[in-house]
Image 1 (cartoon, one colour):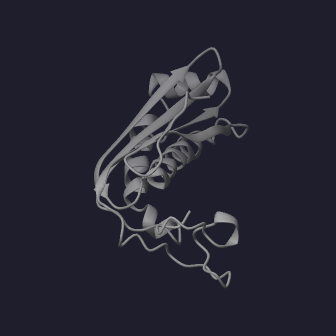
Image 2: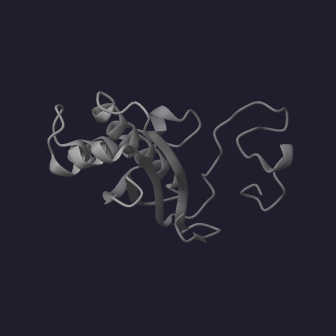
Length: 168
């Protein structure tokens, strides 16, 4: 749907105009509301790699601490990285990592908030992706078989439609 309530052209893809050309969606007529999004994702690795991360003995330093900072920075820069995203004044970004020995994995969860006219799902997803990429970068010397998976928005609220899904 467009902001006017009419079906958007091109099958509902709002980032294309009637002529099929890419454009930034006009959010000028939308109300400012408190927007929240949570996203999550997992990186699977060898058990020995997870042990190094948990022990804090990686040669490049504190893997999860640095990945947290990278994820927060990425959320703040999403408008520069994703061409048609609006640059947003974020009011809150938090990033958590959970290790799971049973699946030999690390889960990254990002929560992003703003008070504005458009949602923060892309910022939350970008934070998760960059957090996981940083784990990969800092651990690839000992494990080149790591796989990032299950990246998704698990919660979104504050706009026209809310999402609340159980995480994968």
